[in-house]
Amino acid sequence: MALLRAIHGFTGTYVTGCALKVAPLLSLRPGELRAGEWAEVDLDKGLWTIPAPRMKHRKALRLDPNTPPHIVPVAEQAVTILRELHALTGDGKLMFPGVRSRDVPMSNMTMNAALRRLGFGPDVIHPHGFRHTASTALNELGFPEDAIERQLSHGKRGIAGVYNKAQHIPERRKLMQAWADYLDNLRETPGKVVPLRTGTLSASCGT
Figure 1: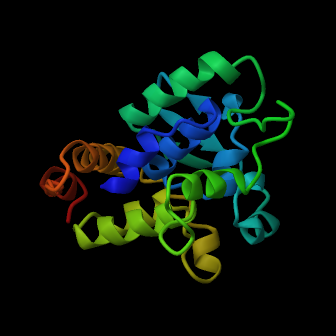
Figure 2: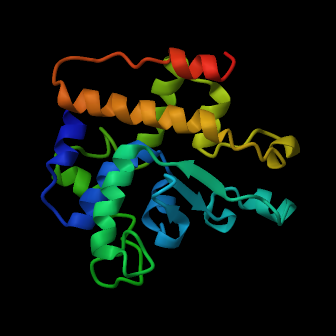
């Protein structure tokens, strides 16, 4: 995929380049990614725990003060990128600080500007679009819907959804690693689409 190859060839600031590389791998909302804190990430376990107040679902937090954090499995490729980033920004609070201050997250326009610099305008892709791409592709490829929706932190409709605290961590860990491997194959084999194998994950999820 031309976009993935362009991202890995990005020559702008290192922090922005890391944000661009992990965005497709994690499928977080851009704001959740930009404001990420090192204290939230356990790179040894490959887990990113985002506190409920930083999530979109503020309604759930109002209805239930005990709303759990969003636990995000981090694929091996993303762990590698974040370890390299930690060498640069790990002595601070923020993973992706802005250029002017290490105490303020990078601007919400930074990734958009970087994508335009690479030749991909908003009519082609924008940071939030990585989530839509992952959701569409993973559903079409037959991955378990519950695992996909939980990875994207999509709550079920109605009050019942507010209290649905299932995290589906084992399924999502396999899902995100398979997705990262698939993206690597797309980037490394120009002109050839390598099929994403879903059999193992589907079987383990009972589907």
